[in-house]
Image (cartoon, rainbow, N blue to C red; front, top):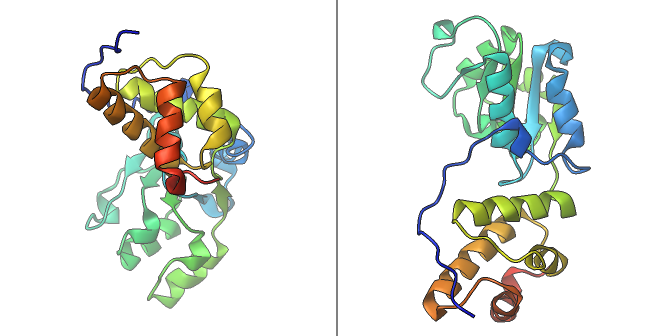
Length: 216
């Protein structure tokens, strides 16, 4: 079988609503963002491990509601009125800014890896605000999300895997975005190095050689 011809070019993520796969692992978070005008105190933390789609969902929300973006070092007073998005709020390192953002919240979305109650906060007033902040969680991917994530990662590398490869991988690999990303990179590199197509035979070898990385 001839090796697959692929361009070594990764596409930038589109962050479109239609590309976000809704399943049991993230349905609560999707519903919470759709109902953003009803958030308690006008703010919500979107929580989950790396790679599960927090940024994708947050960007969809920000685009739909016309949210401004706040980063460390910005002045809250410089933001336009209306919804605000803060990515990686648990690592923002700006207690004063975060405190003032929560106080003026009229649609404040904060993405983070951990719940607000676990974030470091030197200001006592900020600590109390964080303890009361509502959150929605995105869990590690289930079958539907993992298959969609693999599809997106392969597409970003201009790889069209055979139809039977995705179910094969989902049944055997660790159920995490980290593992999906690592698997696609390893398959791509192995295919190029060996001049072979990306398929079940190659995936079997990669899994056997790197079993410690992909244990479920």
